[in-house]
Length: 124
Image (cartoon, helix red, strand yellow):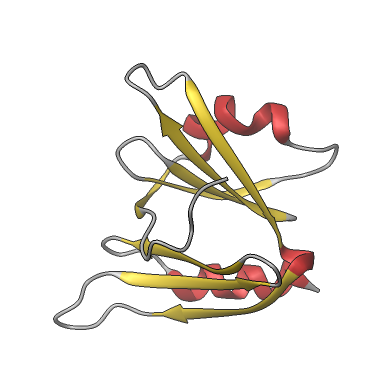
């Protein structure tokens, strides 16, 4: 599992959902829809209508991957922080019982409020 306790795990920029489908398609259950995807240099985070899937690409070749599935149904609380004038990054923090806080940083003009709204919609 990804070590989410080490502060920022990813600095993410939005990417086309089709570009990450080969990574996560085998993990998706029947009817699960990919809503949005964010990518760093090698790692990515995919938001579906059921969960967040964090993919940590490891090793020199990138063939070794660690997948962490964070279901909205098990989410205790979440927080979004919008970008400011001096700080152009936004943040998403998710709290899970037994796991603790999971934090993602989004670079640039990510619509963090839309992500928060989506989590609220699918968490119910």
